[in-house]
Each structure stands twice: as structure tokens, then as C-alpha cells.
Image (cartoon, rainbow, N blue to C red; front, side, top):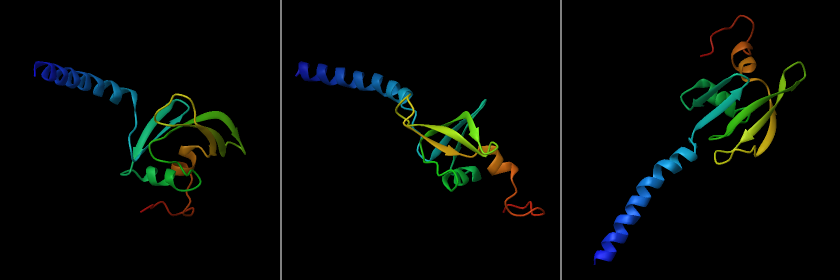
Amino acid sequence: MNAKLLLAAAAAATALTALPASAQYFNYRPHTITVREHAREFTVDRGDRLYWELRAGPYHFKDGVTYTYTNRCWNGGDECLVRVYDPYGDVPSSTTTAPPVGRVSYYANRFGADDFDYD
């Protein structure tokens, strides 16, 4: 009986010490998109308008993934090479191309020259 209690206590202690380490290592947040663009890094979730713009075209970003912009841009800076990092690794899992975040989302008025009401 004492051996079973000792084994259960050891298993509980191991589980309690492993939980914070695993939470630290895996930086996965569902329903969020992390973008690193030059000197800034930001995370958007479903409550932000930018989240839905990044999910739609021309970006087509996915949840829980980190997107890092590189300095390789062409077409006058309208299209940049983006490295895609999965939440469980430090090596890029793939690459894609996308326009810079600020230019399409905030600076370009897609609704007409005089219309500044986005709602």
C-alpha cells in the first residue's frame, strides 16, 4: 500500500513540474495571429478588425501561426517574402508572399477617395 501511495505522489509531483515547462515551450494561442514586421511584433485576435483582414485575401493567414516579414520585397514594395513559423518549432515551416500589413490595412483607402467611414 505504501508503494502505491509513494508512486502516486511521485507521479503527481512530476506532472505538476512538467506543466509549466510545457506551457512555456509551446507558445500556441488559438484564434490569434502573430506578425513580425521589421522592428515591430504584434498579435491580433478575433476581436480586432485586422484579424479578419489578415484571414481574408490577399494575406490568407492562418490561426496560431507566426508570420515574419523579410526585407525581400518587389513590385515597388507591394509584395514581400514572408516566413511562416508553426507554433511548435523554431525553424520556418514554409514561405509565402504578402503585402506589408500597414499599407493595405491602414494606409490604403479601398472604399473611395472621400469615404473614410469603414463601418
